[in-house]
Length: 391
Ligand SMILES: *Cc1c(COP(=O)(O)O)cnc(C)c1O
Image (tube, rainbow, N blue to C red):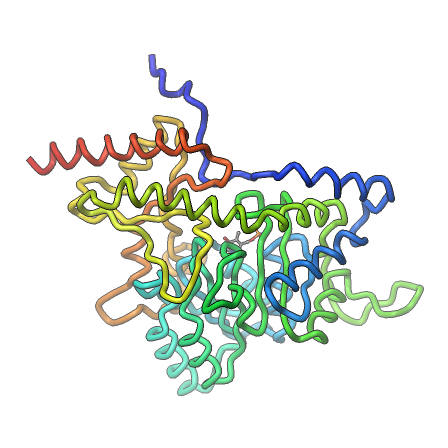
């Protein structure tokens, strides 16, 4: 009998409610503001914009929808190209396909695991020579770590290409004192169930361009022209967030800083328990930033004697969920025909991170006891393998 399966499940990142959500939901029910839009939506937008320091925010049904709107606002059309970080979740790039445009994938660099300025510069210079600059660059902030924004923005500005920050995983992270997601032309956040705060499902588009944000709200509500008879001259979407879910978001936003603190403490515990093991390295924290440590990610070098998949399977036997680092998008069958720029000729950083990386359970609701269960299991797996394989 395998008793380990009876141990309670430890998930990678599960929703963590504060208890105050009910108050906002009740208000919505009492005033019958159940439909899309309403006072919670307006307030949630204002509160997010204030927190991240942008002039405007638009609450939408998902982070993916927010990326799609940003691409529409930048007039991305069929046949255009859009550059995108390769080491990310597929949602970063799917909206490029929605527009009939072509993604070009850009590798990571080792210090942040995010977009490589070297690869971006080469890709843009090729694009310029070919007479076809991208309509936008989507920069992803992986696992809560900010990309090297000064360097990347400097390059994009030199070529006059606007930046969309995919900050779905990095709400609460600061880069040189500024909120991650607030530095590009547009930024997007996700409130999916596994993110640092959640509305069960939802997203936010932010920008300092107030006119563009009005247009975003217009497109997100079926692009209704100002007429009582439902007139439309543009194609729109049903992308707005409901007033009930925005209420959940308001309560969650109040505890964002607590969630960041909790996830950083979880990272610290993993790091102090495991970083002395030969071959084990953790995702570094980029200088000048304070990251939210949405997920603790580590790499297993050869010295560890254990591959990511061996470790992930061993943890699964103990009812613990761990995952490989995102499979780079340029390796996905969906994007097999797309171009890719590696960090340098002989080093594809994202591929190396995918081969060696593991994401550990990092939910802010995880107890210390649960985390020690994860740590002990990792120690036993890697320790045993180092002993037997190294002998
Ligand atoms: C979660 C996520 C998204 C998509 O957000 P949804 O709200 O689930 O649509 C986009 N990009 C990244 C990097 C994500 O992790």
